[in-house]
Length: 375
Image (cartoon, rainbow, N blue to C red):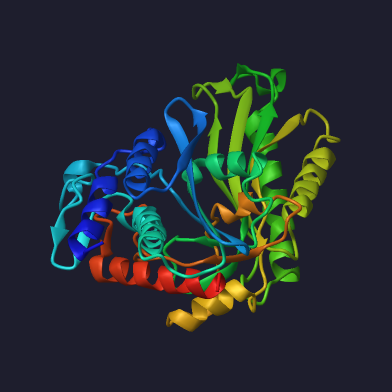
């Protein structure tokens, strides 16, 4: 495949508006690309408009290497503020602009092209390449969770995810979203004793939450990932200024490490809520909205060695959560590396772009990594 064809594929995919939906259009495009190169693929639908795509190319007996990227992107925000329209795939010098160009359609396209070129070049290796394009990574790893449930990770020996990173990441933090609802009783503000102020009771939770998770931050650390990051990020309460608020809700996010994982976080949250509910007129309700554990693979795995052998990357860890968190929620243990093109400061930002040189070089690196791993 020549340079122009490689770039056009990325442009075409960036032009598809797969903003937290409509990933089927990306899956359809990739399916046609694979079919044109005599590679069979299969849609695995999350719903009518959100389709994962799985494609395989086997060449003899050997390891199974999963290569994966997500099809969805986040909203572009105010489109008029972009240097170029966010779904134009506009090229300016070495930069290809567009929402998802870095996060992570360049990685997705590069992995697909690497697989196609290895097949067309009749590359000698032993094993299977399993390409997995996923939906809903940005909103809870919807697609990777479904693929894991359907067994697509059960026989993997390795998984290479093309997210934009500065390192060959073999580990990353987990993520847990929670909600707490404070149930009170409304009354006129001139008669506060007739009501139960849900905001006052929620403030007790927030103070206790901060106190307990500050202890966690001080007591637990990971040499690569650092400490747990715990925050209250959304609060809603009250209807009008002269009424005692009957209901208040907070939401927050906690980034976890293996030393203090999601199970321990949930236990601590429950302990806080249960103890506060023993107080008079306190009625707090805890909900867990999103729950993905941290990922921890062997930094000296065969896959990590293959990446290091053919790139300038160094091994390390990252804080953002990837689809690896869902794929690894099985009994099967396998090598994991996150490594891909893009500018690490640009995901979800205005004027997102990817370096064309970086994108093209990653295709060559992916081919070398796959050949090394499946040699």
